[in-house]
Amino acid sequence: MSESSNPTRREETAGLMKYSTENLVPFGPIHPALKEPEYFKLVLEGEKIVDVIPRIGYVHRGLEKAAESRPWVQNMYMFERTCGICSFVHSLCYGQAVEELTIYKVPKRAKYIRLIIAELERIHSHLLWVGLMGHWAGFETLFMWVWRDREIVLDIVETISGNRVHKSMNAICGVRRDMPENMEDHIVEKMKYLADRARYYREIIDTEETMLERTQKVGKLTADTVEKLCAVGPMARYVGIQNDVRLNAPYAAYDEVPFSIVTRNEGDVQGLLRLRLDEMIVSTDMVSYAVKHLPDGPIRVKIPPIIPAGEHSSHCEAPRGEIFYYVKSTGGRTPDRVKSRQPTMANLPAALEMLKGQTIADVPIVLTAIDPCFGCMDRMSFLDTETNKQWTWSGEQLRQYGIKYYKDRG
Amino acid sequence: MSEVFLRRVEECAVDAKSKSTQLRENETLVEVEQEYVKQFVSKVWNDGISRHLSTITGLDLGEKIGIVYHFWQNQNLLHVRTTVQKTSPTAVSIVDIIPGAILYEMEIHDLFGVMFVGNPWMDKKLLLPETWPDDLPPPLLKTSKSPEIRKRLKLEVE
Image 1 (cartoon, chains in turn purple, yellow):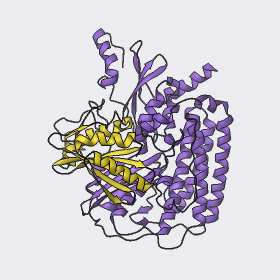
Image 2 (tube, chains in turn blue, green):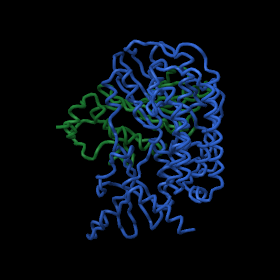
Image 3 (cartoon, rainbow over the protein chains, first blue to last red):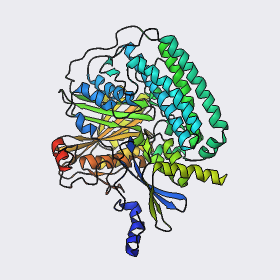
Image 4 (spheres, each protein chain N blue to C red):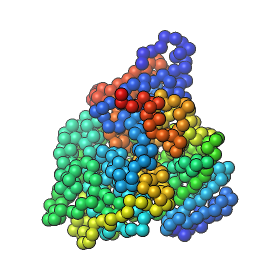
């Protein structure tokens, strides 16, 4: 948006930052190539960010409304399509809420298979995120390496479920596919390899200048702020809050598989990197253990298409944090109401707080740090409070700016 | 742990002149009148009964709109349910107690048309498009039908 010549108009622009989105260009955040457009209006003082106003909802598809007119089983596969990275855990959480309304119990083997897929998904999601952090910091080699290793996980998932992204493994009261035979040794071996790689990446981010420079003391938050803003998952654990559904309220087979959650105390982006890599190592151990101790038995129970009346809520630990589903049935073939809350929604207020006090060059790093499901940073709008100049940058321009800023600074 | 949690929730409920029901193991529901919501929530939050608000759910209950606050503490889930009249959907905001509730309240404002008094961002839209017509009912009410929304937003493919 060009600078306004009218003085009263300019005054309005200054006032509008907090109260209205009137002067923003609403054309742009939607881009067919990008998955989740979010629009942040940054209020700047020179280089420094003083306030951030979010505008989300550009890809709001009305899933909750759509769920009310679809059968219970069909909804499971629709909710799986909420996210293209942590798809499995959505159907798991919705399924668990529905299962509680029925009288049927999930077989033990199915619970173990659910855990295996959920943890494989976590490894794949964390690897994807570490790669993206490398990309935004200008460390392309890390990006390439990490995404190469991610293929290993995706291949395993594909062998088990037949799909790479939308696994469609869950059914209400069970899973749809059994584990393939003779996969045990292969999975254990690959998990060991991935854990070694994670340790190596851990060493890189601890010693490599580029990463240290870009991530240390960036996006600082205190435990108190995080708690008040109700952040979840790694965003809570990186300041030392023990917030993990797997440990606090175990579901699937998490009460039978030994594991420990990782918390850190740095409270900066560097801490998030260490936390997610450590978490990945824990996940590889969990997958190996679950594969070795997989119990025998049936994998699903067939249930009638009508779910008894009642309401239930369920929460699960997705790679990005707690996801929450609330399901209400009036005893029909379709739900009366389904509510779903994704971790990025819970983490957004904390991310906005992280951005305050940072420079523009840190924006890509900090916004990626919350792992916003491919938080599309295209069409970011800037407003300089000193000159009232407003302009927009694409994600790539912003990335280049960040890299150049730190290069020039030396 | 769970018993201590239950007892403390019951104490709060008595103060707010409401009753707590144990739905399942580790899951408690408290139905609170709208005027006592703020008092109840601030007690739950400030006394450390729960320091995490998972989300806020809106419900279409026919004559009324239900608002459910979901709290989580260790293995316990606490649901605090309140209702507002559909004819005058005004609720009290808890943003000054729990700042993290701001987006959840905006979401219910968008999807159910409930006005939260005290939320600083009530004049903004979070999820709905800017072009959403004012006379169209909020989308998640049962009276709102998908074909009509598509037609009014010109989403139908000609």
